[in-house]
Image 1 (cartoon, rainbow, N blue to C red):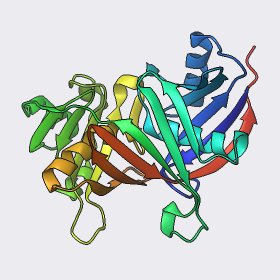
Image 2 (cartoon, rainbow, N blue to C red):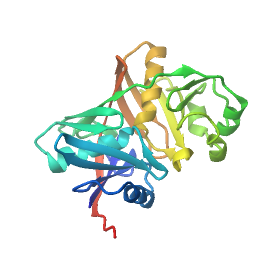
Image 3 (tube, rainbow, N blue to C red):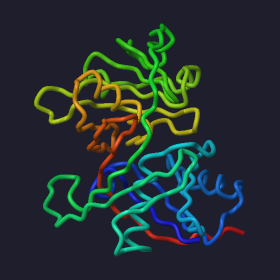
Length: 272
């Protein structure tokens, strides 16, 4: 089974969010896919198989299969459009979250900074957010008190400023007791930073202490900031140790997430 390791939402290796992308000829067992994800220890390992109806994509964390992942979708599109269908610029994946379309914009490499190179734009569903009370347990788990809290698939906590988000050192055990699958923490970007918002994403329920750049988390984060700032086009920064930039458009219940990708390795998995 061929496996590619791709850093997503960046144009340079060792930045952004790494994902493994596996291309089996037919579907392995769920147990084997879960074992491979555990062995890889990335926040996500993607498996893509070409079926008569087109590409089918599934995502596995070290804690099991999930219903939506942004960076591993971007990484999967990068692999398909670079190595399998190099003449194409659009790929569609059938997934647990419906059909996801990824479009490549070819670049001459002069777009600047970490996003130099081809840009891959994903069309994702936005999560419906409902307000939820800020609690003392949230403050204890995160190490800082949110000014607002919202709940979709994930918990979204809004902090007063960017510095608070960057300095968080949450209690992973207490995070497991919070509602939602992931805990996404966000604040407005500092003036002059060029970013509308900054964020971090924690997923101890999936055996992922911190997701370096979380696409599905931004399907919560970006609709919130779009409404609050009154704008549809936003630039977001995930303030993890690796860091990553997301260029987005929000509208009609969808989120368009764009970013670069960089290939780290190509290998072969040799299961029993």
